Length: 344
Image (cartoon, rainbow, N blue to C red; front, side, top):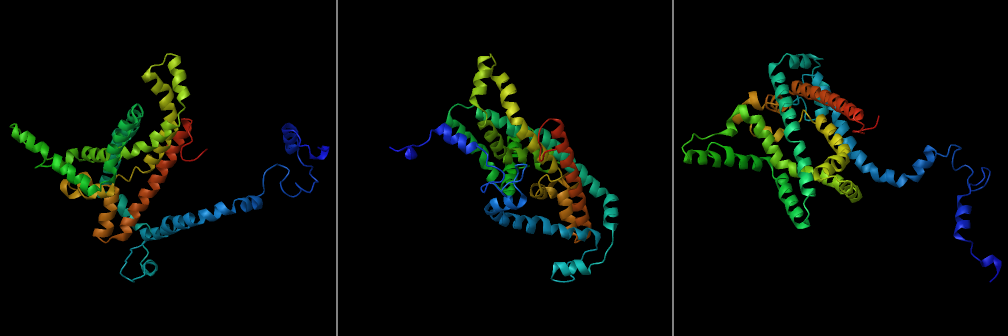
C-alpha cells in the first residue's frame, strides 16, 4: 500500500480539525467576526427554517393577544356598540369621556368589595390549594409499584376534565340543603346544613371545589421535575445516613424549588382571576356580597348592564395590578436565587 493511501490516525485527524484556519484563508474569510460571534445576518440565515416555523404561532399571538389590546380605548369612552355593526366604527364614533370611568370605579363601593373578595379568595387558594399538588406529587412519587402509581394518577387527573357545571352539581348533591350530608344529619336527629347557599363559608367552598377539580392536574409539572432528579443523589444521601424525610428535605424539595418559584410567580400574576365560570354559576345562590369578584363585576356591568366603558376601565385596572404583582413576585424569586419568569 502506498503512503498516500494510508489513513491518518484519529489523533492526528482531530488535531488537524481543531487547528484554526488563518484569518486570510479562503475557508474562514468573511464568515465570522474576530470576536468569534456570528453576525445577525448569518444567524438569521442559519435559523431561517426555525423562524419560518414560528411565524404561524407569532401571527396567532399577535392576532388574539395583542390586537385586542387596542380595544382598551373603550375604557376612555362612553362606548355604544349599537352605533354600527362594525365594532371599529362604533369605537370611532363613541363619545370620549377621558378618565370619568376610572373616577366612577374608585368611588364605587361595589368595585372595592369585588377587589376584597378577589384577594381573599386568592390568598386562601394560595395557602390551601397551591401546596396540595406538591404534596400529591411527592406522595405518588414515593409509590413503588408502577401499576398503583398509574391508577392513582388517573383517579386524580379525572376531575380536571369535568366542566364546572358538573363539579358544582356534584357538590350540590353532597353539601346542598337536600344533599347527602344534610340527609345524614337529619337521620341522626340534627338540623340539616345548606353549605351551598351559606355566604360565610362560600370562599372555603370555592377553594374545595378548585382543589378537587384541578389539584390532580397540577401535579404533572412536579412529577416531571421529580423524574429529572438523579437516583444517585438519593443513594448518596442514604449512604450518609439520611432517612426518608431528610432525603425529601435535602434532595427532593431543592430539586422542586425552581419549579415552585416559577409556578408561584405565575400564580401571583393570575391572582385577580380566581375562576369566572365557577363563581358566576354560584353567584345568585350566595349573593354578590360574598361572590362578586373582579371578573364577575366586569361581566355584570359590561354585559348585563351594557355599561361597556365602565367595565372596560375595571378590566384595565385589573390588568395593571396583575402586571405589578408579576413584577413584584418575580423580584422576590430573584432574591431567593431563582430565575422566575425571566432573568435579571
